[in-house]
Length: 108
Image 1 (cartoon, rainbow, N blue to C red):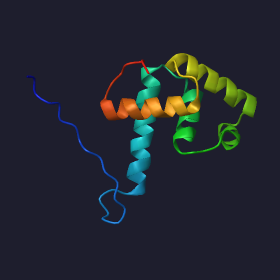
Image 2 (cartoon, rainbow, N blue to C red):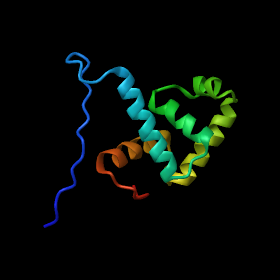
Image 3 (cartoon, rainbow, N blue to C red):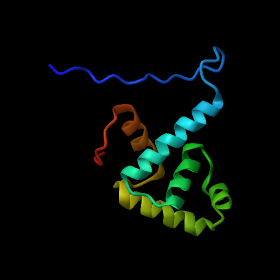
Image 4 (cartoon, one colour):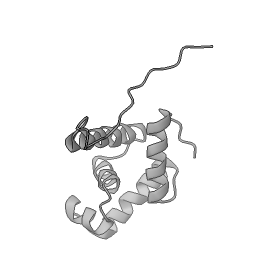
């Protein structure tokens, strides 16, 4: 058997003070950036994905990105095409699976 790959176990415990909220934001930014690199998302698509990870509704994401809701819809369609997913929920679930498993596979 091969050696097990060692990975840092990341935990967020604000009570114990092990990590700060800014550490969580940095981690999420890194995850979104890596995922966007894997699937060759455009900068605007990456920014939209970052909004979704933070739980920002599409209407507010449009304001944050300086575009219309229709443009946000277009960005999502492009993200779906690039990732092979059919919904925001599927994209976010896939992002978490990639994070958890370290897999770069585009399969469901």
